[in-house]
Length: 411
Image (cartoon, rainbow, N blue to C red; front, top):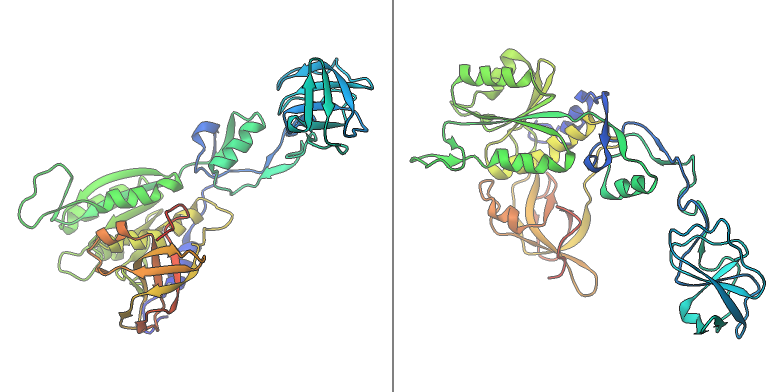
């Protein structure tokens, strides 16, 4: 436990992952629709890549030995895709060959074009070549029968490219996890609706759904539940019967209209409530029927952070990933300073950049309120302050969690 008596982030994650039952149902999906899906079984290569010896350069295929100053009669031109099964080179002969073209019998090396001089049907070698130089051997990348992707892998663009190179048109993946989203609060209105005094637009559902997009889940939006306990109960129970994970935003604090925890107490099970992180303390986790429930705070930054740090690892575990993703952290020198109250691990919005000498620098953004979403859009990383930290000083080495790996990292 933290000094506050609430669960630490690590303890909360442990409970979430222990509660996660991975899906086991599978389906066959077209390769073009597999991005972000979870591979359900080991994939064994049906063919070798390349399937035969091929040229790695544009040049001339020649038998050995190849010495500088030798001349050869050019007898063939071999393009990528040409059938060379009936062709061969005799002593003193060469074949004009293109990158990716199959190596014909009698050829022991490919001399790249820059190391030759061509005159009609004769080519002169200007630089000696070694055996197998500029030849990619059959199976150089993949050998038939080799396991190329393990079960439990999230399929990325590179995986799909590899599978396509093996001639695969589809793949067996785990079924999509069904995730429900509910926004709560009388003040919440859908976009496009004129606002009355005291009302705000529903941003949390949009943000949470966007964060979950790379996980390739099947999202069901159950709309906005008003601050009425019976109405909220009906909405939560109906939604929980249709999805694997239900995420609500708002209503998990201790206000008079915050009914989410009460509904969970009365109709399900509360795993924990409150995590020692900032922003995001009032996070509720439990179960409604067969559905796992996550109640994230209503403040937009708190909803954003808790979805990243708690909800996404839960979903990854339920998807049967061989290992839940551990966020990358690096060390950087702090530009700025901050006084803070100890007791909670804090995720501070910051801008990470790399100096000309290669050192990482990070600048703390001024506005850290959980209601200020603009600093999330301006940030590209979190500075992570542990629960014992009371001050961050200019020049301190701090732990930083980048939002993603692709960014403009120059100042």
